Length: 101
Image (cartoon, rainbow, N blue to C red; front, top):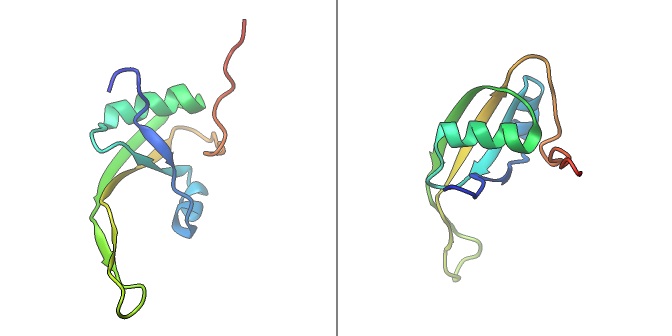
């Protein structure tokens, strides 16, 4: 995973919005991402210090949309809940500005 970011993107749901009030942010991450990789990528992308990273694997699900039609299959994926040190807050949709020379 060298050179690639382990962060795919933020997860924006009602529950993740409530967690943001407590300085906890939810991200969808690569399947082979580790806590250390996620911590380093958050620091690099957003410029904030990470206190804790929790990882969970969401299992695949099948869903019936309409009777007589095939089931829709959602693949399994991995997500991380990141707790930020101190009172800093940030917008998970906005990356840190790149320094230009």
